[in-house]
Structures are given as C-alpha cells and as structure tokens.
Image (cartoon, rainbow, N blue to C red):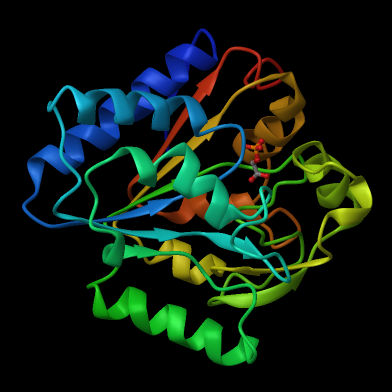
Length: 242
Ligand code: PGA
C-alpha cells in the first residue's frame, strides 16, 4: 500500500486526476473502473477540463462503474447513472457504447450481476479502479461482513450507509434499501487500485484501514493485499493514523 498525503480535497483531486490522466495517456486501450459519491467529483471535473483542452482523450477508454442502486430510474437525479452522465460522461469524448454501469432496474438481478462480470472479463479486466471508502469501511457497496471472494452481487445497504447517503436525496425515505455492487474479488482483480479519501468524517475509517487488521468486518482492509494499491488522502482523513 502506497499512501500519498495531501493538504486538502483540491490537492487530492489534482493528484488523482493526474494519475488517471497519465495512465490514459500511456495506453492505446484502457479499461477504467469508476466510482460515484462526493469524493471523486473534483477529479472528474479536472479530467473534463483537460479533455476540453485536448490534453487528454477518452476515445480509447472503456469504463465500468462500481455500483448502482436497485429500483432507481436512470433519470432519477440520485441514480449513479445520472451522476456519471452529468459529472463526467456527457462532457468528455468517450464512446457511450463503452460505458458500463450495473442496471438496477433489471428484471432478473442475478442475471444482471453475471452479465456485468462477463462484460468486465470480455473487456480484458479493469486496468485501474478508482475507489472511495465509506465511513463504515465499505468499498463500492460491499458492506461489513461481505466475503472477500464476492463477485458482482446484490447487497442490502446498512442503515448507516443509507443515512450517510441521504444527503444526495430530497427525502431520506427515498434512499433505496438495496444495490448492485461489484464484489471484493471483482475489485481485487483490477490491475491497479486508487483509493481517494478526504475529510475528518473518514478519519476513523482511515485509522482502521492503515493501523488495523485485514478482516471481512472491514471490507476496505482487503485492498491492503493488492500489489498495486495507492491511497491519496488528505490531512484530515489521516489525522487519527498513528
Ligand atoms: P463519498 O462516498 O465519496 O460520498 O464519501 C464514498 C463511499 O461511500 O464509498
């Protein structure tokens, strides 16, 4: 695990966007795993700017998102599909056929999970996966207790996750109770992992990630076993680490 400590959110976003841009520029074809949430937004904003300035292209990039709520329409402003289109995909030169986000409205969710795994495999696997961490240590929507052997699956969101994510909804009651998420093993199969962390709300999670044991009670701890795992975290997020 390589930890890059930065001053604040802006610095984290810049470091992350530079790492992603470097990888995209180094390869003719690239499979990029993406995350939603407040954390990666700043990095996406920079990638959009650099794409507009032609410093960076996404024409050769295939993307896979980590997760999606079950039961939300794509047009729902809190769906991850809507987030990704508005915060990134609508503003860059990516081929829309190369975007993948789990379908949380699929009639057969088990089939959808299997289809998603197959799509990742047929793309040749994910080269770089961008991640955030939940206050409870979840990675994507893999809540505490999820098997490290898990592939894309349906998960019941914990009350604490629903509470934390209520800020993205008009009414907390609207937060779905379930989601489709790539599993821990699906994430660990990526060539490289990049975890972005900012803010004091994440300080306890970072302490446990860095100073604690590897355990299924704390999903993010699995990442420490990955040979190419980089964390970019700001001072507040690292304030409780020994
Ligand atoms: P956040 O979400 O970026 O909105 O903090 C991270 C997560 O829950 O994984």
